[in-house]
Image 1 (tube, rainbow, N blue to C red):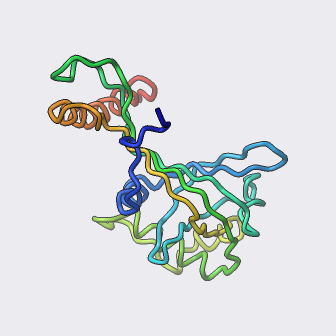
Image 2: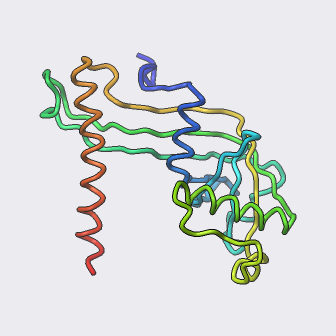
Length: 199
């Protein structure tokens, strides 16, 4: 049997773009001297089909965010344990999840004006749909941070969608697993915050 199973792979780029837009916090992996460097940053997918991001200049990975260096990027959608109790037929326990794996090359964008506009654009995207906050071009706090932030863009060279959603089960079981994924994600966040971050 081939791995990963074909029914858990989704090669529809539009589905993967939707994951990127809905869950923009990415895991970015670079390799230096055979050691991985890993950072978690929001990335925005733009109309040119590239990913745009910003990194603190003091982050050790910042020096690799240039010169067409290779990157692996992972976007994570919802995930949860699926108990056999949610299925209509006999099944074994499993874990369902949505992931997008990308490989690409990164290029530094040196323009301060482009960086400023990119921060504004990213804030606008992340504030949607209500736009309760607008990052203005003359924001003094933003201007003070421009010297400490590096902007970069990633050209995507390969896409892999991993959508493990009980697709190999009967239609009723697929629907039950989907319902459980929604329920578990809503409840687990609330329970986790209550347990670990009591005020």
